[in-house]
Image (cartoon, rainbow, N blue to C red; front, side, top):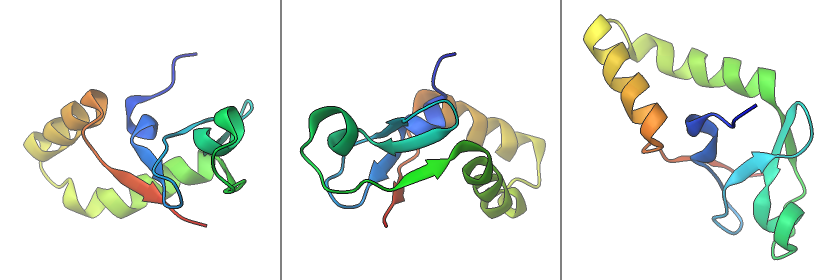
Length: 85
């Protein structure tokens, strides 16, 4: 399964690395898990993270045009979403 562009945009607040898949249903800091250059070992379950993103963004997606624009930016990986522990 390819990683969704939106979640490639999630950045570690400790080191700035992308959050990547850290198991089947989790995301974690690539700097910590893949390169050993970060101490942030926090992992986030995929489903609650997706629900949280939708609940935060949903009030701002009232029109079809805004929803389409959001979707396009999401797929281009232009949204910068940071996660800190």
